[in-house]
Image (cartoon, rainbow, N blue to C red; front, side):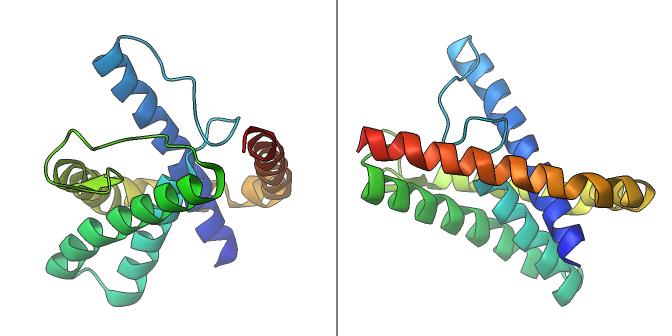
Length: 167
């Protein structure tokens, strides 16, 4: 089970990075260079989607429950992430202050609805494909997972070192 959850976390963290890059390209006309980690991962996306996949597996496929969770989980993860990063290091990676309604500039209704929509697409359309991919690459994943974990932890360590210098 841990291997499956880790696989989902890393894959959705990478997909979150890709989503943000394309969003920046379309809104700013260039890719986004800043991020919490050095590598191409956005842990907020991975954490939120892994929770949603877990909840769907445990609670079943009740669409109304998943609709509510798809609104609450990514919004809560985004708020907590922004709050903790701002509290510990004084860094604000996003600011929704100009988007109404918002809460402390860290979350806002339009983006929460967008995250909800993306999460529902992820859980219902993308996740079955990811499950098939996970099963078909299980042995390879078992071999590579420790190297990927070590990479991720190393990236996180260097990020914390950089942030300690900044703050």
